[in-house]
Image (tube, rainbow, N blue to C red):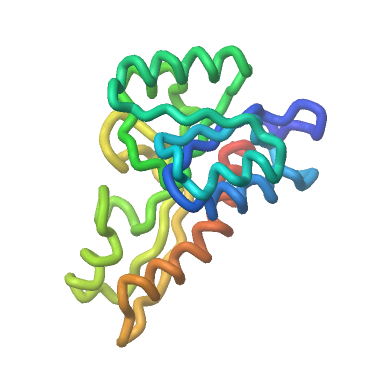
Length: 193
């Protein structure tokens, strides 16, 4: 992929479920000249997600889908994304698993950030599991999404040292700070491949 110029940035949707701190860092990143993406849509499965406030602040379209009926929600989602000419998806703390069919529609164009050094600690409770196993390091990974949970091709990782008195909360905070730096770097890497 060739790095796009300011005029034709890749129209991107960010999927969130929570506070949207990675979303905020991606929006800031999208505003710089070297950024290959422009964030055009925010999708959430949680109407109470704090991150939805960024849609108002930055004047970005948003949609909440409850995913009670996965097929229905995904079909609605595909129609919204197509109508808005969305070419790439960034998952940022999105707590729903997308179906194979949905992923196929966006093959190679869905990225996710995960709070562990994959392939270790796929899924949930990554910090707790790393601490329980007395790991010396944890970190975060940006990877392409495929149909297997947290198993897509790794783009970039950042290692974080676990200190002696580390708690789940302190480790989560440490890793999140790195996630905000890693996601933009991974996007730049994808577009320079």
